[in-house]
Image (cartoon, rainbow over all chains, first blue to last red; front, top):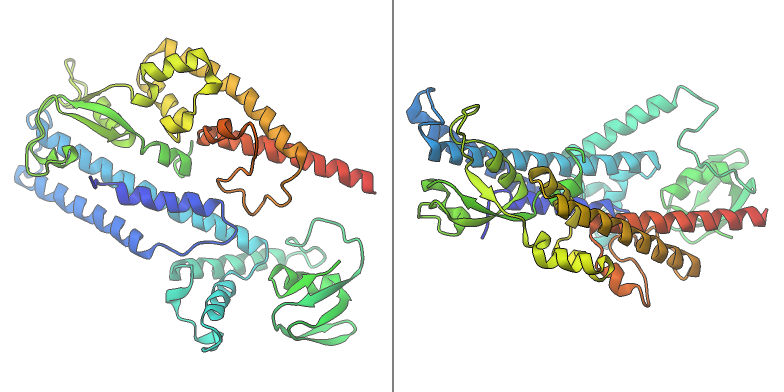
Length: 217
Length: 199
């Protein structure tokens, strides 16, 4: 028997699953829309139920109506909680990803570009297939800017850097994805797929975090 | 138990049996008969988020002395006599998960709503007894170390083989969290020790 609040519950189950995943699963656009629609319907019901009373509703005299109103109100409140919790869980996850240095928006684009088997350039990805909602992409971008501004205050310390002290200054890396040319103290390196380099760890740390390079050994 | 807590929200979706104390024309859908009046005395299983407020709110409008609530509720089957007797006999032998995935969440919620001293005692004893057992299993798994990378597949699979499997499958959500914490703790401790030896 479908009931008010069931859809919201489904949404929260999605959030629960997302908590245990490394990647963020796709945004449930349809479900979110359905829950908000449910709230709007309930609100309309409440308004029409109260209309004949002209603002002088007496719960004691109209117990059945009072009970229905309460049920509707609680359903709306429940849906609100589900919606907020769902989005907050995702936002938390996104912040975590930003801090860990993975390029979230970029990542979503690449997954989709890979699936499309190189038929379209990655730049042409449309919003539909990203696992983030447009609002979330916005959030990530702005949160990233905030973090960058915060980090910019200290030039000597990389706040998102690795906490493990490096064992070696130089490491072997293999290139997993074409990453173009990077500039290092020892000149430019062209990172083409499947090639291997002996580079300074500090120069490529970010590329490793983003999944372009793999550390060997 | 914050407002945004996912497990707390899922716990609130657990249903408990309620009995309506008045006729409500528009709520027939709760009893699967959308076109009919919901009659006084109808027994309907309602989720906690709905049942709790309906049971507390009084139908005579607030602070009235003879306030009668919209519904009365009973303990859910998960906390019924059968289960309680089984828990009294041996807490470790009852797969709580089969009763409810959020057994303790549901139970504490019900304790807030009703005064069942004996049930509270049984539950407390259950938790303590089972927690010991959980800690034991969590250590064992960490000790054998046949479980190389666990950060990725930490979800719901606990990756355990052997004797404890049956017991571990019966853990409710809260116990699973406890197990995972104990397991990760033991594992991290072991890893740290190995690291110290290496250097």
